[in-house]
Length: 140
Image (tube, rainbow, N blue to C red; front, side, top):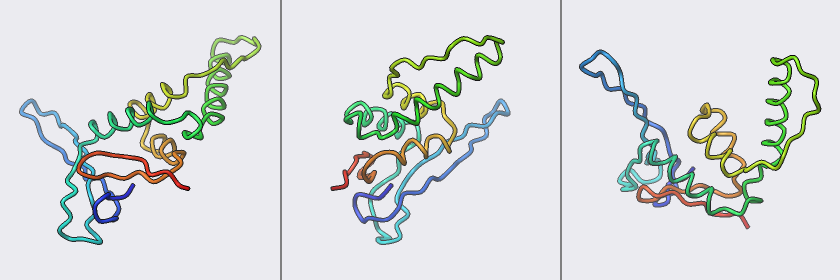
């Protein structure tokens, strides 16, 4: 991910806030590293808003631009095998057509950081953050 103003990278900044009831809230903000321009005004965006923007971006993309269809089918087949093993059944496993967009959104919302990174690595282009809005610059 790149800064749309100065071209520097984007970094995550994790903050913890102690609550009165003893709990802790975790917040992650993403912003420009300011390597190329110390005065960059790109701003920061929190993780929740960033995920919502990625979901919107996935809705707009051509399904072939996701480039992850086969990976998702393999993952679903693996899960079904695991499910069959737990239930002790030996039925034939069939992987129906999978809604790749919804699966990608699920990974963005519920996946581990490594799964999210892997999903975003399949996007064919450069992710740019400019004025708290992400966009995908496709490679030619």
